[in-house]
Each structure stands twice: as C-alpha cells, then as structure tokens.
Amino acid sequence: MKKFILGLAILTSISAFAGEKEDRVEQALITKYPAITDGTTSISINEYDVDIHKSKMEIKIELKGDKDKESFSKLDKNKLETLVKDIVTYSQNEIGEKVPVKLEIELDRDILPDETLYKHTFEK
Image 1 (spheres, one colour):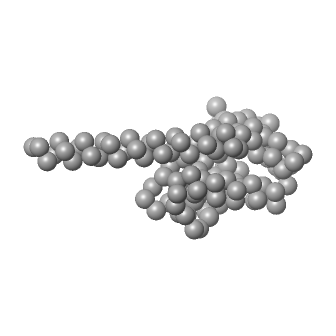
Image 2 (image 1 turned 120 degrees about the vertical axis):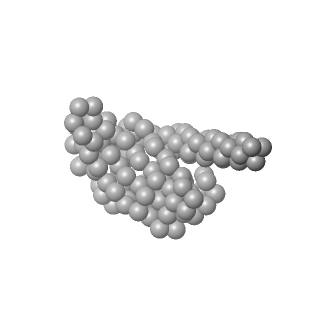
C-alpha cells in the first residue's frame, strides 16, 4: 500500500510539472508573439495551446472569427513560414530540447466547427 501511495504521489507531481512547463511555454509565446504579421497584415492571436509529450510538442495557435480568416488569406506566405519557424525554434529553446513540433493555426468559431488554416510538422 505504501508503494502504491508513493507511486501515485510521484505520478501526480510529474503531471503537475508537465502542466507548468506547458503553461510557461504558452505564456512566453503570447508575450513574444502576440500576433501573426507579415509587416502589412497583422492578426492578433487569441490563444496558444501547447502540449508536450516525451518526444514531441504540439502547438495550436487559435485565431478568432471570420475576419481573421480573411486577413490570414492576405498574409505573405513566405513571411508566415519564417514566423512559424521562429515560433518553433523559440518553443524548443523554452523546453530545452530539440523535439519534433506539430504546429497548427486554427480558426476558433463559436457556433460553426473550427477550421484549420495551417498545419505543418517540423522535425528536429
């Protein structure tokens, strides 16, 4: 019974640490990258959602409303790629590991289903 309680305590502390790490990365990203911009068009980011697993990280960037979808279509795609790579590198540096990163930019809608505007997996 003591081993079971000790194991449960260890698992709880590990999961709490993982959540803190994800929250720390989310806060760092919203501070450093509050908007997606190409110099002429700028879209405010509603939220970052970061999930860190043993050997990979998933980042979801949420935009809000159809107005942001129109603005996203106007973005210079080369500058968008550069910005996304910067976000990935910054996130890897925040966790201290070079892991594969799956990044999605998603349009968050209240009534209609969410729509994925961009999706790419970056290897180490």
